[in-house]
Image 1 (cartoon, rainbow, N blue to C red):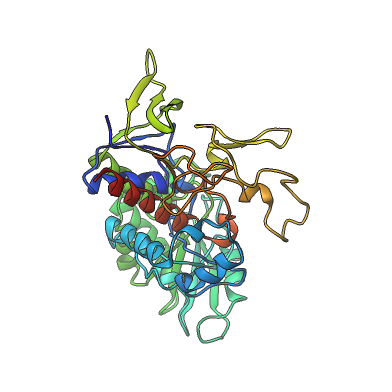
Image 2 (spheres, rainbow, N blue to C red):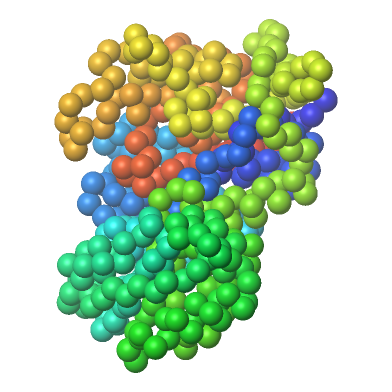
Length: 416
């Protein structure tokens, strides 16, 4: 009998498993595959837009929730959200994430827009606009998914903290990540730049092209396993260096995912590559979780279950051709899944489909249509919660962390 079974290995699932294990609970985490952290930028958002860019995310939560009463943050106080984000930063350490949960910073994206976020890898810190700074955006000719001219031009159209246009220019070098390959992926570049001799070779190509005091921006491929690769490259160049997030798979996201996965595996039993085949219940409680394994399914009896398997992107929520939305693991009722789910105004109001999900109370117990818990020991966290278009408002990690830790706190109280 386990104290907690966690389903899902994304931000919410890994955070829940680590926090529960640190609280002294016996934990099993089950996932059908790798979680979604590597699909993000490796940053942590609390609230970026509302709809204008937000500077102080925790201070903005009350007004945001007031206009969206079904939002997950309606169940999570700003103090709880802030402490959850601070917990993650302190857990993974300063070579993985830096920043202040009370304040957003703006960093360049892969198209040169400046977007607000809260915690960032230290490899992105030099990209926060500074008054009077000059930037050289360096492309790698054999990495086709990054366009330095586009990034530099768009950065130059925006103002820095001194309200003056940011000065940026584009450069390109023909760095060979793998011999004989003219179109190398981001992960191939990152693995190449894990090696000191390759960073020296790249620095020798870039250095002659730089002007004095320029800050160097590169696509976020500066090492996969070595967290100090970017710093070593900066030392070799004699210029500050920063990574610019690019489209998935995200190398900074892969780094963060690997660190959290290692922590979870060291503290809890982690079963990967095993889809859930059944959740056994009795008298209003979850009694066991069954997952696919070689030969026959394996059953894990548990005192509590945290459902952190994500939303539509992971298949934990699904919509069929008739517009019926369902939760695919436990067969739970889905809130906001009736009527017209999509409308034609993409830039207008939130799409109802993306707001659908599981309803919960302040303890993160999943609620039915009558607003009472479906099962008294079943909790939800992360991307399956109803009420938020996370990609639009930039709130995904904050929701995942705060809801996961809130669920764990409830379970600890219940079992103590």
